[in-house]
Image (cartoon, rainbow, N blue to C red):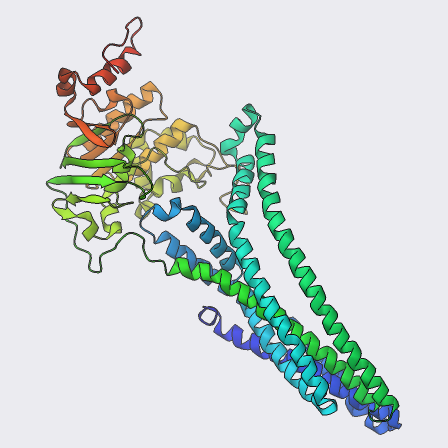
Length: 591
């Protein structure tokens, strides 16, 4: 990934890193030559080493600044590529199951951390390479003075490497364990800082409650980090002490040897520099190797997500989805979200005729919204099949199916984008077609409200972001009903699709606006296939077919008139709801 993202910068970074690795060795040898010249009183021998020292130190400074720039540029390019790869994979998951899995969300958070700074792995790898060069140079220099002591210094680094690798595994394991606590901490922090929740938090005085919850999660995570830090501190302090003993013993030997005339002043200088250089470079190697190991363990989450596959089975050779002419059939459809969950749908048989409006009715939790998710193929039935003009929708590409569907969901998204963008997300091919956006807004009855905004369709529907950093523009927050109409406008952009799904399309509207919207929707649906979910039964009384769900099964089907005449559950619900609109009339019928 790094090589594909910044090949030339990597070559340059490697070059300056190697130069930086050689300069300490050159400085040590030049210093030895200068000191030996001073000790021998040979002034003529000092000019060359002095000039060379000045040149090498100047080069080292230049290389350092070049390395900083190249490191930053590599980091930027690799981060861009890593995030592109990660989120391309995430957005490519056709189903919803993974986004409802806490384990996947924990893995995604760690993958995002890795993708935010993948260049760190480059730094650590090059640090290992640089330190290897430095160690090799100093080991060769040290071996000329004391082969035995050279072996002792090298052997003392082996336990440090093994111990540090074990600590890196423990740290990554700790990061995985505290993942849920960190996500909950962020959740509570976001609740306290977003406008969506600000009203309830202040009305119910939840600030202290949420703050204490956030701090409790932070303390849990901090306790795990503290235990890890203490373990690392005690181990690393012991390793540093052992290294200091080795270096001290070597220094004593060198001074005694110099006193006996076996080493020159330059030899002692070189010995001290070599021991310090070898130990320092070995420490860098160990630390960088451990950090690289830790980064690879984190990057494993990135790789796992990128290579996870689609989640939903995607056919190798997707079939063609025909234009809807006959209808959509649910054939003995059973569904539950996992083996540990109860059945949401239990053997549903249903036919949605082409060109007809089908209303889904039932109490909360009866499977209406789940049925819609299956129609959009966010999930596959656990058993049974859904056929589109006889074609199993599992045999076609999910995006091909969804391109034929327009929808308004009850939990639609209020994007913190401009008003135009909030409509255009319904069909991005209309993003630059203002006439289409305006027509959709008019059909949804929101054009006048949008036009009255300070910047019209360019107005930012957010108090947190501005549309342009150079433009001092305050955003606007819409009412719930206005947001509902914007969501409807997205559906109107797809008015020519084969299937329209409307899940509580007027939930945020007043009675007059609801009547107006349903009148517009009736014209939109005319001659087209649509599925409408609504708890307000009056809005679907004109449906060609009303389907009543209870406990995951179809218990009644028919027109409004037929179901009322049957006097069953639908008739009871409708009568009870209608009674609420008439003064002095008590609801009748059994619950």
